[in-house]
Length: 170
Image 1: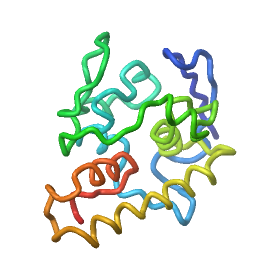
Image 2 (image 1 turned 45 degrees about the horizontal axis):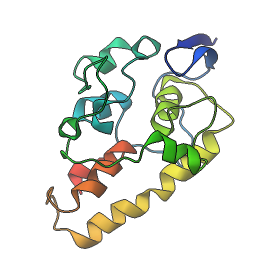
Image 3 (image 1 turned 120 degrees about the horizontal axis):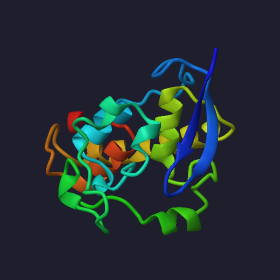
């Protein structure tokens, strides 16, 4: 039995998708994120800018401890990020590089939130391949920093958090 979700926010109106898997389960075998969307939002990712206007699409408990920039204000606040640094490129750059699928106009994290909820999609293979490729940053931190030195390569550590790698444990 599947559940249908309808997304209505600033970037999508009436986008429908079905949840065909239980939340947080039955991931592709080579996709093992270390953080859930709820954990990522609570740690502080994307300078508090992500998912502010589409919270009704996702479980309310994901946002209870989320570090979000105030709704209605323009900009972002890097201090809301766990490592207190800016580690994202603008959405326009993501579009220019062809990283955005039209069904997930906010990018990888939106795809991951929907995948985590139980949506399976034609873009899953590409997004999981991108996630695996991002692991190179994990190796750069491991190869250049003392264990648990959170001040070392903070931009890379923050970027890793954006991709559901728990860089606090490296």
